[in-house]
Every structure is written in structure tokens, then in C-alpha cells.
Amino acid sequence: MALTELDPLPALIVIDLQKGIIGTPYNASVSAVVEHSAALIKAFRQRHLPVVLVNVAGMPPGRRDDRRSLPDTLPEGFTDFIKEIAPQPSDIIVTKYSWGAFSTTELESRLKSLGVTQVIITGVATGTGVEATARQAWDCGFNVVLPVDAMADNRPDAHNWSVENIFPRLGETSVAADILSALENRTNK
Image 1 (cartoon, helix red, strand yellow):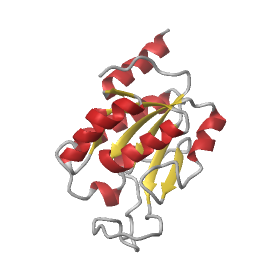
Image 2 (cartoon, rainbow, N blue to C red):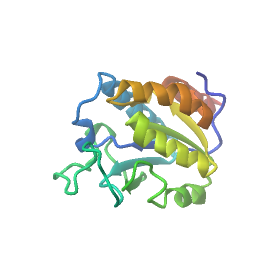
Image 3 (cartoon, rainbow, N blue to C red):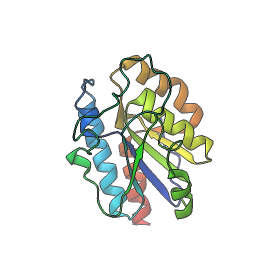
């Protein structure tokens, strides 16, 4: 797991770090996900690089036999971002109604209009929201970086499958510290 380089204009995409999702059962690594994502957000904001905060507010219409799907009516505050990643005026806020952040939103055109060519994706859940967003980003032609210590899934097998089998085919896997170091090295040049 190594990051080869950052493109001139990368964007950070943070998936579903919201009160209604983080409040559900996750493995112990969710606190590390929040910590690493918050550190990346801070570094991107300091360098005036795009930060995209994504929340989920529903699912597309269609048959849903999965009882773990989102309910039709969400409780109050469900979509609010957790305090550790509080949105700032410079952030791009995206509300999605599917697993991935690109298919039901205008995220691709917004990022491409800024000149973004690379996305770093963090958040939850690894095997759904993060993986779907990574697949869609790859389909849109973005270079994809996945810091595996900045994502979690309440299904450890799904997390491991995505990290070991899917992500290496979509882009580079890394850890948050490597991305932070690459950002720092660019600043010091």
C-alpha cells in the first residue's frame, strides 16, 4: 500500500460521516475513520483544495427486500454531519439518494469544472458507499486513492473484500498518513 503521487488538484470526498449512520453499530475502527478523515479534511482545507462532504438522505425507488435499507422517513438530524467534520463555506455538500456519490448528483461536473483529476475517498461503509463512489469515480475518469484506515464497515468481511479485491483494481490504496505527508511535501517545495 503506497501512494505514488498526488495530482495537481485532488479532491477529498468524505462519505456518510453523518449522525444517522455513525450512530449505528460499527466496529471499533469507526473512531479511527473519523480521526483520519478529520485530519485529511483539515489538510485539504488549509491548502484550499476541494473538500466534498456527502450524506445520504434516502434510496432510489425500486424493490427493496433488504431490511437494513434506509427507512422511507428518516429521523430528524439523520443527515446532519458529525461535529468532527463540520461543514465550512468552502466545502461542497452533496446529498445522495443511492450508494454512490456520483450517480444521483452533479458531483462529476462540479469537480471537473474545478479541474479536479484525482479523488481521495474516505468514510463509511467500505463495501457500499465508499466502494460505490470509488467505482463511479473511476468510471468518470478520476484517479482514485483510497486511504484504507479512513474507512470502515460494520461488516468486516465486506470491508476486507473491498480493500483486498476491489480497490486495487480501481486505484491506489494507501493510508491517511501517506496522503498527509504528500500534501506536506508539496507545500514545502
